Length: 176
Image (cartoon, rainbow, N blue to C red; front, side):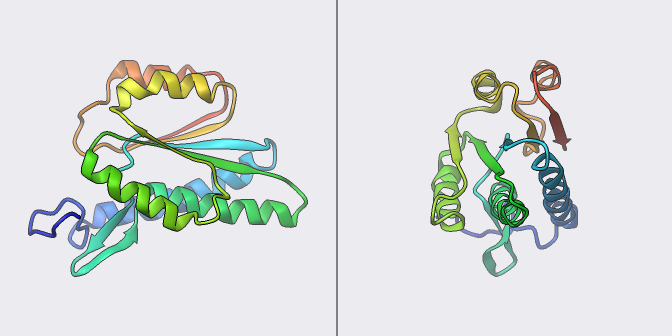
């Protein structure tokens, strides 16, 4: 388990921009999924740098939902909303992460957030640029929301962005 230190990148107590970004992601993804779910039976949330799934807030360890868990919660809520209207809609999650320590937590937190496996979640252990071509092939033609939020600028190339922009299918990109 990750130990909390003064420089812990997963502690966002003093990183208001990260807190705001996660809030925006949750609201935006939900609105997007509701609209897409009125026209398509499924879509994908592709979290290109998924991280460990939860953040710390000072001494409150693992208390703030990260992007992949926001994706799962959105999937479950929008599915329920659509079912009430007689529509079937699945927001599937693809989480790409390369850091071994983060993957352990990511797998645990995604299982906790989706205990009944209602949402299809695929966790890919890879660098973003390496995983991207196969992901794009897998979801070709299906609406997708790409969340591209690396720690720093590592791994995001113009070529990667071009592949996403030029894919077949409705595409939404949240790039930080």
